[in-house]
Image (tube, rainbow, N blue to C red):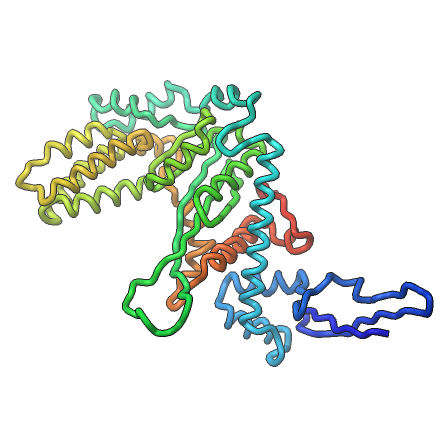
Amino acid sequence: MQVKTYRVDGEVGRFEFETYRVAAAGAEGVDTADLFPVLIGQEWYRTVGFKEIGFVHGTLNGSFRKTADWFNRVRHQPEGGTPSRTLSHNSEQEGERLLTHLNEKAAQVLAAHQFDLTQPPLDKQADYRNQPFVAFSSDKVAETVKACAPEQTYEAEMLKNPVPYEVPGESVQVSIDPVGVKKQKESRDGKDKEKKRDMTYQTVAHLQQADRSYTLNGLGIGEVLQLVLAFLLHNSLLKYNLIFFVDGQRSLNTAILAMFAWFGPVQLILDWYHLEDKCKSLLSMALKGRDIRNQVLEQLTPLLWLGCVDRAITFLRAITTDHIKNQTYLDDLIGYLHRQQPHIPCYAARKKLGLRNSSNYGEKANDLLVSSRQKHNGMSWSSTGSVALAALTALVRNNEYKLWFQSHTFRFSFAA
């Protein structure tokens, strides 16, 4: 008879018990360890209850050390319980396993639909490319623009704005935004304390259709866009408009347009807050003093709010030279407005129609998945650790965690 020790970390505590292999003469024998999942080396088996309490109610909300103290206390194991380093490792390991499965799931979905990331199947190309954009009627738009225009002379330019007015119920709204946290140093030798701490970045995407939402994250824009496309295919969402709310980052815009170049009803919309902030920043460096900058902004922002980019550019070019401190920054702003013009809507009309003007859903997702947990004083993270912990948080936000902990799979769809 052989005796082995089996280790379990569960909701009732951390404990060990013995398993036995019994073999009668001439018989194959029975090993009670076969009744439990195989463990490697000094590994502990973590129960579903351990993961729900330790991760969902623990490490996703507070530091690993405080979580370990609390977790072991409620299990009445203040001594000999789960160490904080083990809890940290377990959380990161679970998140990495989740991300691997998520990317494998995305690859399977794309293969099943015969997508190669940039091209739909040959028999679908024309359908997707010619799919109409479902928008409000021209009469409704004209009526709204007329109500928003400060003068009749603005109406023609407002109506000429290139950004259409999507019907919300016929659209999937996607907010994508990178977020960074302090990067963990490779060593703690005390050197280079005065150096600015490096950052590690990941990308978060928030998808919404009607009152349903889903959150995804990954290390880079390309990876997350692949997940977004797989999610759209898996849930039959390509019958809707695709509206991407962006912050104006050139690489992000380029990546989105490249990924969905084959899809007809796709539109990028520049977030109003980022547009306004960009104008403030560049004008502060371009003009002589805050008073002049504020006077210019008082005339510029209403034009951009109305979507009259051509008027805004004409106004900027007419600023007298005695007000200009650095012409380069003013030219940068004019160039920025030129580049972003296809993505700058008539924000006033959109607001009146009840449409979104902001990527704040994506920024809120960033806060919920990353910032609120990982941006406290003194915290720093490895690239894999940061994105893994955020992936677990997304799992909980999507209400997928119970299925994942029980069977290591998930629906990959909106919560019921």
